[in-house]
Length: 425
Image 1 (cartoon, rainbow, N blue to C red):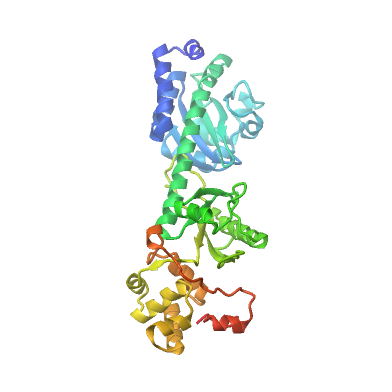
Image 2: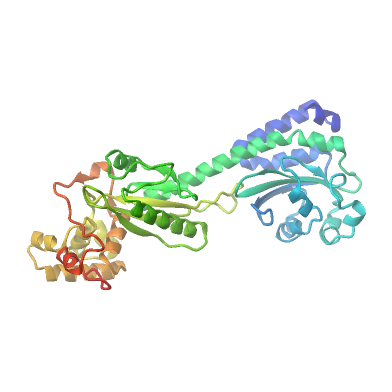
């Protein structure tokens, strides 16, 4: 603080209040506007801006500014930020501090006055001098702070630049807290999205394909041995081949969540040495951050939902019928398919023919927009008609026979499934 007091004609109390404002902004990002305002006042400057950019520092994601009108700032963000004559050199300088444009860059003042940046943007704003630097960064973003002065205010001296840099560690700590809070909010939003939209136990996977969060009911499945314990943060199957297929599905879904290429989701049957295979349903999740969020974080996740066929989900057939305009019979057979029951068992239970049940299933698939029994089951298990809370689940008294994908057509048909290339109905 002594450096600030000696470098600028302000009292000790002003510097103390400024640092207090920085830490208030750590928990209340809307206070950064006041921090910039106080920084301009404290350092005898014209204006200031803080930019959150992408990892290449070429695109502004969000920004704050004081003493620059909205139109001029927008033109700066859209174009002139990348015409600044110090920008290329700044990218090579160590981060965590600011540099005087008058003292620490190869572009001298006379050369600056001949640039497009000055003549088409800065001149009308009477911006002649500044300090700037990348004060914080992570794998996704860079944060740059820029403070400007008019010609009459003069350049920043070495002492003044050093005094400003003595404040930067406080700003960095506050930004770290901002980032941590934003990351937690994105994670909470993804968990909430998964829990509200789907009703199965799930694992939330981060962009590296590692487990980021586990729902309590998914933890119970691991403890019961339905799935092997994760290893080094990676979700495992008993079969190494199934594990590899699962990781490929997760990577594809993460590609979709991030916004690149990938798949909309998929599923696989993870085979076990004892018991029925476990159905793993992989879906991309991308909770939306508010466009005005100060510290936007990438909300790209994949969720791996687990359906254990040895557990009977409670499916609200009335709700299922309401959601898809199904008849009572169509809802009954659709719910049975989601539970893994065969068409023969449904027909026997209601005292009708398999042909009638198959017709009801075809109607249900048409109304739900699905073409295969697996897709219908996935839609129901992930929908609001399915209640998968632990209290609403019962262990099966007898295992359900689930055909291996490579079994012959005859076996699959005996289990109530259609042949390859045809709808399961």
